Structures are given as C-alpha cells and as structure tokens.
Length: 185
Image (cartoon, rainbow, N blue to C red; front, side, top):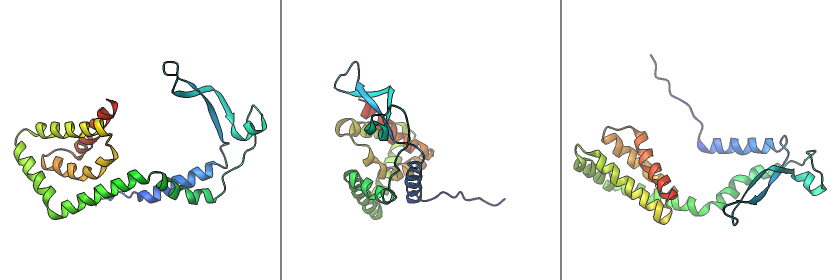
C-alpha cells in the first residue's frame, strides 16, 4: 500500500482565499450593525442588542427594513492584508524576534542539550517536568499577559514530548491550557 501524503495549502494561500471570499460576500450580504446596550451588571461595558438590527445603507436614509446596498470596491481586498499586518505589527514583530532568537539558540545546540538534560533528569517522572512547564507558562500569561509569544516554543515542546514518549498534542496542551488559565485569572 502506498503512503498517501495529505496536501494542504500554504497559510498565505488560505488567508488570501478568506479575504477573497469576504470580498465576494460584500456583493451578496448587505452591511448592517446591531445597536449596543449597557451590560446590566457592568454599565461601563456594552453588549449587542439582538432585537435592534439596522442595515447601514438604510440607516443613513432612515429606513427600517433591508434594501439595496453598496459593495466594497475591489481595491479593499488588495489592501486588507497590509492593513491587517500594520494593525498587528507589535505582536507580529515580537513573534518574529522570539522565533529568531529560538532559531539561533537551536542552531547552537543549547536548547537541544537543555531538553536532553531536562528529560534525563525527569527520569520516570515526566509529570514533574510537565507541571513545571504548566506553572511557568501559566505564570507568564497571568502576570504579563503572554500568549502569542509562546507560539515559537511549540516545536521545542513537541521535541520534548516526543522524547518522553508522549504525543505532540501534549505539547499544545502544555502551552494552551496554562495560557487560558493564566488569562482567566
């Protein structure tokens, strides 16, 4: 039996396809918005009023029900990616820098040596190593709001989990469970 390789498009192809689909939907779905009302227990916050929807083109004309609408010009699709990158530049560059530092450290062998030492030291008790990672990641998310900064660490944790004869999905859990708990607290 031949091994079948799964084919999945590159992430930039997916992003471009989603942008293109959203642009096409502007020709079909009329624009509108819900009114926002204060949250009963927290008046400083607002929530969507599900009973009060108004089509944007009609709101300007003072009409209550849906009707004709204008679609976005085609150049909006071309500007979506640069605008999105510009608005998220802080976190994007931070992830690039952290990823670059990790790549340099991996090329020297320092991270692999530290992982080998940590796995050997844990011996028959990998739970202690995992608990330490959970605590550190949770503390980072709780104190300084780390989250996206953990993304470059996932390949390292996958290597650690595979060395301890665990599934790679455990590495994702080691990152995202304490991230969620840290943010929640």
